[in-house]
Image 1 (cartoon, rainbow, N blue to C red):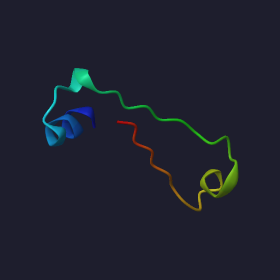
Image 2 (tube, one colour):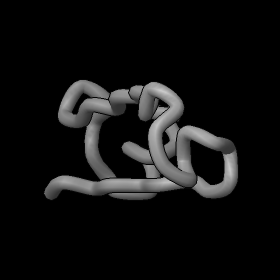
Image 3 (cartoon, rainbow, N blue to C red):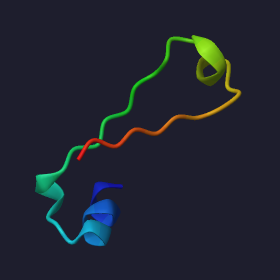
Image 4 (spheres, helix red, strand yellow):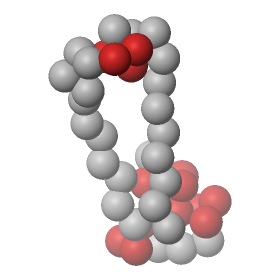
Length: 41
């Protein structure tokens, strides 16, 4: 994932971080009714 994203962004994979987490079954995301994506630049 990092390799493909870095290629699209024209940067080295070492210049970025990808992190995954859970919502501890809270809200619509935790119930599997939706997804969420956040980007910090």
